[in-house]
Length: 95
Image (cartoon, rainbow, N blue to C red; front, side):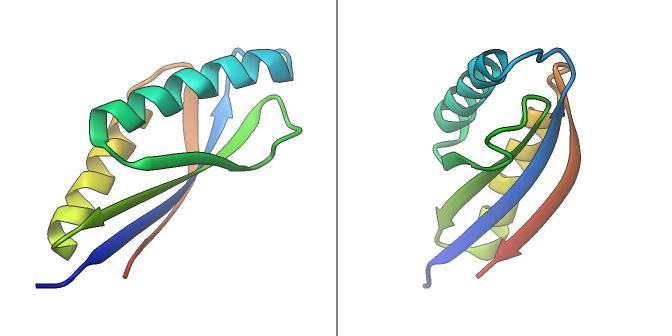
């Protein structure tokens, strides 16, 4: 048995954000929901000064690559289901 790490960088466009304060509120809610639902690490990793764009990093640890990828895909689907933003770029890696 081994340890597998799935890492995802997901860039999103926030539709209704009109300020950095609004962006932070939306992202804080999203990050908390994803962490609680999928037991993963999540952080804002880029576009910190942009109020309409964000990049999030997600990291998953699992005992199998298939499980890590499934968990990653479920979290991305969860993010994609929220109409407040649109996923504009995804970079996945499993090691």
